Length: 115
Length: 113
Image (cartoon, each protein chain N blue to C red):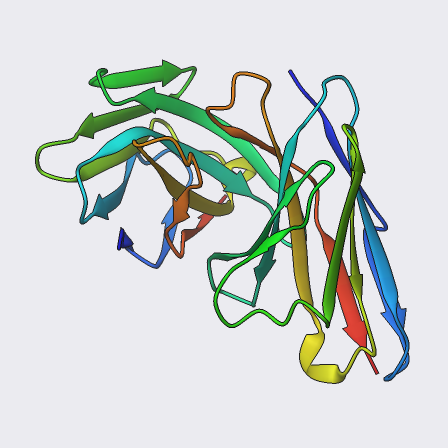
């Protein structure tokens, strides 16, 4: 089946620094990718929809200047957490919509810890 | 707005038991429903996908059913094993073209030897 690669799997950073997370579709082209955030024992919350070649669509309450999304190619979307703070510590998961457009393939997630 | 509820939130059983995990949703205008497994600190692994026109799907020891009119799906795990220990998430994809799923909070399952 289709594979979505997410990197890094775990990152620790100091407060105030920026962190970039990559999401790649390895064997298919994904015009649409999604970024989710998951708190412990909670469900996945959609942060934004990333569209290749255009601006991302952010969900209500998600700061677009803090969570920068770039989808520059059909196989790569990046999420940059700018000026990270401890409250940004969470598990971030990306997904890519399948070529048929009807469901999503998920990455393995990135554990972000901000000290 | 679609709401997805999973019951129970947590389950601990001895090895060998047959299990039923429940998922309910408020808006029956769905395209499909998907069950995922998530191991601690890991991403999601798709287990079963049921289209809105289907009643059930089976894969090995797993069977998922869907009753769209009543807004319910169940995941049945036969002869549970310690390796089944994980969190099981239900995701409902809406009809209408967005195909952005709404997730439940999951059922945390522990199967002990």
